[in-house]
Image (cartoon, rainbow, N blue to C red; front, side, top):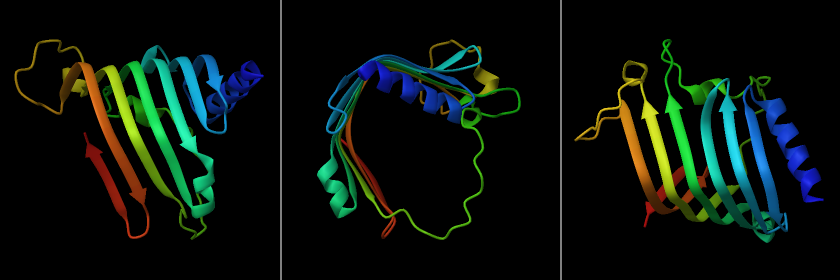
Length: 171
């Protein structure tokens, strides 16, 4: 059963993007928890995201109160690479296929509440085109070339369209 869910999820995601998502295996109850192993997102020959494990836990009953309640998001041993090309377009911008323009005026009715957003042993890279081949050690923060190894981050996040409240709390 989980193999079918993995195949269907992979097909749906891959149809919606120009890149390719690969999922090794899935465990969990689907309704309250989901563990995804050996996940990668590639675009052409570049790997944008790779993780040994993504652990998601959620509370579906909160949907009755117009709240998407995620009680845990944990990425373990992840690599995230944001790279800019010669046209100054980021690789992540090229990932999604265009969708038809939404002309409706409806608003997103849900509050998104994420408790326990955890990055465990994450390697994060962000390089502008001018710095794409720059591998020297940076002694100060420079948004044009970010290379963070062994990142461990614990946070909570809330997004509420009414009254436009967006908050991330780092723990």
